[in-house]
Length: 183
Length: 305
Image (spheres, each protein chain N blue to C red):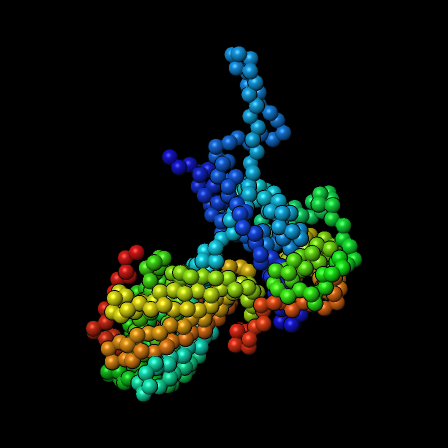
């Protein structure tokens, strides 16, 4: 006979199937590479599974998991688990002008993000990838909205410098006028 | 949105776009039911012969194989079709035979609330413009430029039984035009179409006012008439933009509707955008005294899956 634990597992599994990739994408922007992102999401899902039975029926598992991913990454960074050493510039020969396709530009952007201070990186990813408002970013990171603004401003400036002083043009996003939303 | 903001969003979307294959989130999770997790300890068991048995297992979760583009798009269609949303659209209908009619086009704006089974569209163009109200199993059409109605009434009620019903893969979709030749379809019909898509490919990033995400191309089978048997099925092709929250934000579809009775074949193109998710939509039917209900139109049951 199917038990409560089986139902719980099925719901959790369904959530992971439907939403896991999205958090993997968040994780790669925080960590800079897919292997580390995989580790981060794995660790976060274990925590989510442990908390799953206690989640309120109207809770948003996505938001909860996002918070776990960001905070787990922060604790890893503090423990120097990944031995991250932010540097001032990318290695030679990786100028944006040499990159011609989406994959290359994507790799460049990940590498540059990985060189930002942790808090600036988290703010930029939550703002520009997760589309979160400042107040929610502040709640996730446990800082003030003013700090979020400061980190975003400094993070964008540093990221742009790391990318060669200008934003690389996305390879496939030459949106013709009629493709843009009206209003 | 400032251009830089949009550019950065697109760069981040691209930077997270090339998810590697072979990442299985659920593989170890399924094994959880058959293994016991021991944290930092080894369980010892002594057999009659004095042997030792160590049982130490750990839960491991590896990342799920990245969903296919088909799965992602159909999932987005299902999700969006369950939300309330605003729409804007342009619809164009072009006769394919010279001299068989006049090309028409128009703009549509409106809102849909599948939970309430309501929706409304206001359209201009198509001669004079008008309105369609979707309420439960019916749609009410107001089209001043259309045929004169008996009794001087101004609204026509027609059944739209498939408006809110789920569509299963392979079932096809009826895009019946109702009583008008406008071929204006509701977005719920388009989402149902999307859920039956066959060929789906990711085409990089997409963006719009306040969102970024992924662009897909797709084809899907379209049938006509209440039970899909009145005309040969055709293939619709289009593109869809899905945002980071897994919602369809843009849907462009084109298909050729074959000749039907006295109507010549036409090429239909629909370009639709979605926004403002989650706001309830309340729609009231027009006064009964103003509604004409044709006697020969009956609700057709949805095709069996």
